[in-house]
Structure formats: structure tokens, C-alpha cells
Image 1: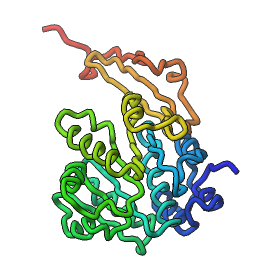
Image 2: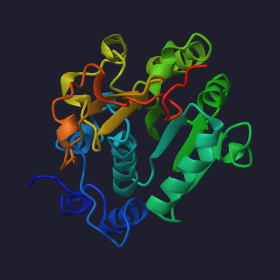
Image 3: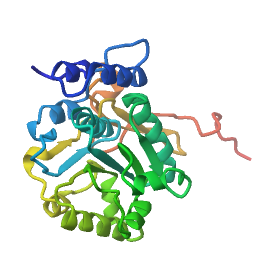
Image 4: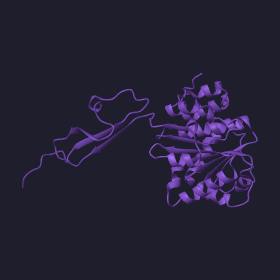
Length: 283
């Protein structure tokens, strides 16, 4: 059975129908059918994506902006929690502002029965629970995870998966070393924990995949965008240039745009009047 919608995930018993309905309520209006993107369809058909108790192959999810990378990771987390309620998941994010948003989304999707906590400089009320592994999902900023990994805590007891959002930040000279050290320690002392990286399609992940021992079956890559992007530049002489990147769901392209290359900006119109809309007057 092909997986083309969120409801198909429930049909295949990857996650339950209630979770699917909550996700659909958040992502759509008027209870519309939530169609999956190309990246999501490709990911969900991979047998190696799902936790089976023995396999702990690491995963890389690489796609364009708005291609649904994060939802794939959230479904993976929900699959683990719903099948094995004694396991937990860590979700690492680069920004403090993302902690509250991610906790809210996960709580809306998974429901109130799960202990979903955030931890950053602004979210410290649940730190004790996270340190003692009394959580189901914990959303933590990179630096806080690095600090917690430096102590002898119970945080990783029962943890089955660590999801790293924007994992390309590991190459940042300012923030990368702490993230790299934390993941290196994770690989060395907790090799049964699966690492899932999420990144854009604008970076080369070959070396990172090699380091994390990610094979082709668990490397999901898609450069397609669900919705196309049109970039316009209006020059001071009145010329208008445009570059179009097509999307999966695009249905119509105007006549002026049909022959425009995706690789370069092309002039599609020219305003013969000056920028003030009037002819220059001689003095």
C-alpha cells in the first residue's frame, strides 16, 4: 500500500488514527485531507526508517524549505512512543525560540498523555525531570544538551532516538564544536541510540553521513519544493528580473514565465519611463 496522505500512516499502523487526526487538525483547515510531500512519501516508504527494537541505523533527512522534513522526524518519534511506552526521544534545536514552538506542536499532535518538556535558558522548570529521565520527549537547545552531557545524569536512560534539527550547524565555528562533541560522546558511549539529522538540501552531507555511519537506505534526500518560489528584482532603471524555482504543486505559470531559466535571472519586462514615472525635463 502506497503512503500518500497522513491517514495512510494510520492504515499501515505506523501511528494511530487519533494522532493522525490531531496532526491533520494542526496542518490543515476544515479537516481537509493532508497530502504528503515528495520527501515525506519517499521517507515513509523506507523500511529502515522505523524502530524495530534491534536496528539503530542513523538517519539523515535532507530537503528544501517547507518540504516537511520535521514532520517525518515527528512521525518517527510518535511511532516509537506509541509502540514502546518505556522509551523516550530527545529533540535538539538551535534556537531558544524554537523550544516553546516545538513543545507546543508536539503536544498538539501527540496529546496530553505524554510528558513533553522543553529545556533552555528560558525553560528550566522541567530540567530536573529531564535529568532524571522522567520525560517522553524533551526539546533542548544544543548548548544545554552539551552541558547536560557533561554531567552524570540519567537523561539518556531509556532514550531511543536523538533528533538534531538543522544539523548543518555542526560546521559553524562558533556553535559547531559543542554540538560535535555532544554527538561524538553520544556515538561513543550510547551507540544504541539512533541519531536523526535534519538539514536543508543546500549543503553537502557526505562527510557527515560517513561520520554518523548513515547508509543509503536511511539517507532521504529531496530537492523538490512543495510550492514554487518566484524571485523578482526591480532595478533602478525600471527593468524587472525574475527567477523561478518550480514546485510539486504548481499548476499554472504565466506566459512571461514559461521560458525563464531556473539557473539565472532573466529580464521579463522593462519600464521605459524613469523611476519617478515621468520623463526627465531639461533645465
